[in-house]
Length: 256
Image (spheres, rainbow, N blue to C red):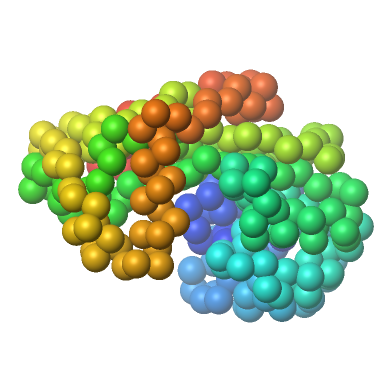
């Protein structure tokens, strides 16, 4: 088998490359900067919007669609007709939207697909690190609870999908527990060696800081997570054979 990895230098892709090579799988990567391409791989320069050249000679693709729109997705997946596609999706795809549109486009070109629906990556909290080093993170909805995923767990799921039969399977990929944003900041502070506390930010101030367009979707979602936390799934353990890595482990690996 030869697998094309898109997003090969990103949060999950670099771990997917490493894991596939460790399994003896031939890996091709689609990158914009060949100087950053992982060693031991076949390199194609380009991007996912026009992957025809990269798709030649591969049996499968690890698909990261980095846009907040499904525009252009039909052209992007067409070269992978009848190939295995492992798509890094979102738990939000359950409700449709562009995530759901991408999944539908994939179903239209192959029956050998696996969707990894992620609640959110732990790396999303890196934006707090600068504030955490000062001992205080000021943001809204500190009690919003998220089941953030270690990027290595996403990679482990993908590797199983490539090396075993997981065709036409949808997996909900989460962390092992739903932690409040305030607890996430505390854990980051402990890993940094600088105690950090959450300071609740007024919504009007947060809206101005985030930008009205992003705030329009993000703030209501975070508000909903105060009383209705993100789900916790056992799919990581079921597929990989090991429990999902906790947020504490992620923070120690990043900052200790």
